[in-house]
Image (cartoon, rainbow, N blue to C red; front, side):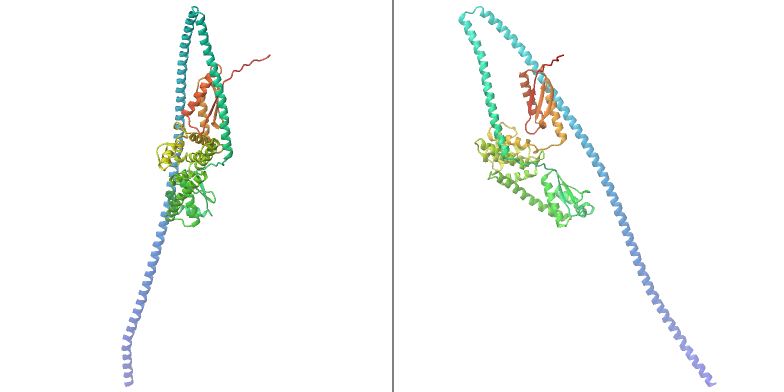
Length: 522
């Protein structure tokens, strides 16, 4: 029994020990599982949080993309609406121009009608005056005949000699007129020889300036960089330079457009520098444009100094040289004003030397005659008045030069021979073939106005503008117009053209009057 009892005790002891130990082991395992579960739960929570953040980030990106697309569509719609508005504005401007042209044509027709009415009134007054004079003469002759019947020999001889003296005075006047005409023809031939010699000695090439410049680009990808994100680069460039930059489908070039040639040249040079540099952004654009503008001011001064050296008229004030340099970027009827001024200077010098005058003074007058065009948009008055004022302000003391600048367009009474030389050289330079050009519409309009003005005079059958509008041939009705009337009519037409029309150079008026006798032999 004792062994059995010992075994039982041992079993009981072991059971008592095993139960708490199992409980402890179960609690340890349970805690381990809980720790693992917590760790797993933390990992799942972190993973869920990361996935939620990724989903939120993707959603934000999608929303931003949608907003960007919507914004681009909205910008495209706004641009389209703006283009439609601009197109409507252009159509309205064209209609306004057409209405203005019709209004101007109506005003000119009214002026021609008033002029014709005034001429008719004057003609009627002249006819009435002549009729009264004829009546007076008839009465006088009748009275003289009554007196002759009672005159003696000496009184009759005295009266005959007086009448003979009157007739001879008319013949003397005719001879004087003949010699004056001959002298005038000789003078015109001499003047023509001098002009021809000067023109032949100085033959300059002529080119027409335009309002656009092209800038070469290495590849079409550069166009996108020039435009920039949402167009910020091109907007900054246009704002800094004051020009329009045209980026179209033309391969390899970008177009810079502006009516101010100085701004266009600054923009062209600045854009070339930016393309070569490769760094194109708003701050760099502003820096390059400012640097180019400073370089352009120096370049303009060098151009003026080179023109003064070419004309050999030193010394000249630096401000006047700068104004002359600005003329390099100014055109008149597409003719470069600085090249025109240099040509006028050389022509004046050659003609002055042919006439025995001071060639250097003549060149100085010719070079500075259009200097007012460099600042006529900044000061009140025409370019002759502005140029004379600027020349006087910057130390030009020569009366001949100041008078030539002020009077080369006959704005004042010509009192110096150098003014005549400048006016002649100015007309030569402007009227050379290829020197100037105008649009076809303006050209046709000018010819029509010239023909309409000439046709509006009484007794005119037809009028033709020839020589590109530099001459008008007028055919007068021979049955209503005498030779004396033709001379007066020619002078009246020329005066009306000077008062009512704008034209470069001069216009020759030729009145043709002839009587034709036609008979048929049958």
